[in-house]
Length: 184
DNA sequence: AAAGAGATGGTCT
DNA sequence: GACCATCTCTTTT
Image 1 (cartoon, rainbow, N blue to C red):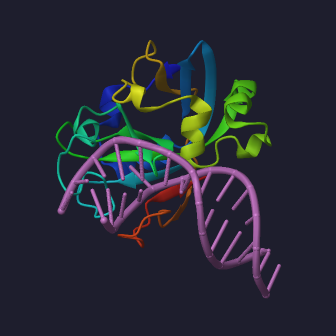
Image 2: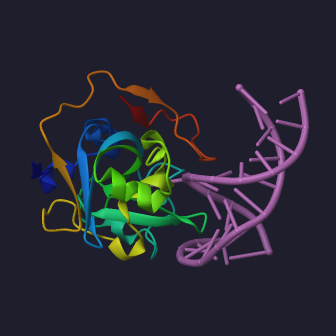
């Protein structure tokens, strides 16, 4: 499996999001390797009132304005670390939120981090994804295009779903009708 | 099966 | 001081 190239990420988030489905995210943190298949995503653009970049550049959203293919992590509700893939060329604040994973490797590690649960509930939500992968703000800005990174995204040849399910995004209060949430 | 509420902390006005 | 791109547990139909 090889990482996706930076150029692949340099496109608009609503276009990238469905193509990210079925890609693999790998984390190698604290000596534990975990792999998950991406099964739910949401797109956010700078134009979008629901996006963290909508108000313009700030300290928190700096990574979203940075180079594509890097990781934007934010602390949600003071508790959960949510992962985003930065898309679009540098200077354009877009990203794709990873909302859910299907465990592929290191299920035991995920279960230890998450507390014993059915496999289905190990990473079926953005906060759970962060916890299962062991990712926190320390990984802010990580280059997801480098195999040597502690977190990276690869393609094992599995194609994205032909007709992903599309619908409104979850947990937001603005632009609630924009259909930028994708699932297989 | 659905609805409600508390946890918890960084970011921005 | 308000607002969250959430999760879990408890209470109520």
